[in-house]
Length: 161
Image (cartoon, rainbow, N blue to C red; front, side, top):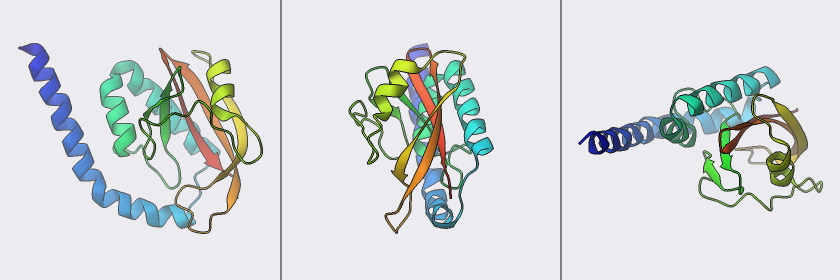
């Protein structure tokens, strides 16, 4: 009985978050064209995501993927991946295989993050990437903060102007 109530609660929460984020995503898309998130904001998003994953990974992954609860700001968002490189929580790529990702400047982002992530320690990696929501298809230097959280690697990054 408790399990069914829990599953029902999680499903209801997911539906509500998805519905409430639809209107927000339109506003976020407009903001992403002009507003760059900062290093401090990206680091704060990662800290919040890590704390929520530790408290309740199911709710955390749903909120991160839906971009609700302040998990989508300007061009910033947190993400989490399994240790095999599958996006478990990502606003654009959940369920995708990230393990072979290589950027245009040759950085094997997933390989580095999965190999070097340590619990309780925030690391960073920089690479070139198309800015989220950027209609000009222009690449920018992106720096991503990442850490190991249980059996996942979570991160959040920012773009330099």
